[in-house]
Image 1 (cartoon, rainbow, N blue to C red):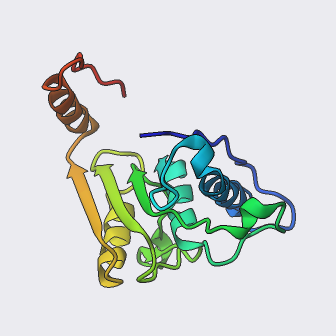
Image 2: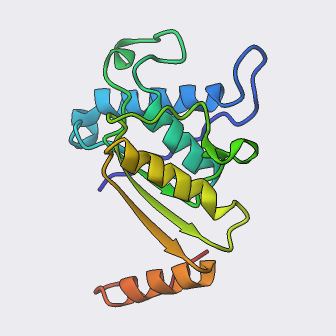
Length: 177
């Protein structure tokens, strides 16, 4: 497994929707990795995205906004697909609009072409658990393969991580978080 860390734009940019700058960075990153897959030794058809908290929102945005780049093309890397092949949303934030009955956020247009998605959430997270639950249900409604792990507390999720890593050779069983 190869990981690529993206340091993305967080602040809103004048003249852009509030999530656009970060989405531009994510689209560019997925396209660059796919365009340079041979150089990195990765399969260009197995490039995913993972995000925690607000990064989970960004991963969801990248998973649902790939048909058209949100920026002007820079080079040939912008000619390849920026659609992730899978997504991991861990403690994702801002997937729904609470004031609109937990409607899926408008910048997340889930379709049958949204990549398969794994979600993990805890009920005691500062972000309401309904955020991830309604997103999961929207994925299922669109017939997108999805899996969700819901834990009562962060301590429970951490304990599960410790138990699963402790049994593997070379693992200490320690988990941070």
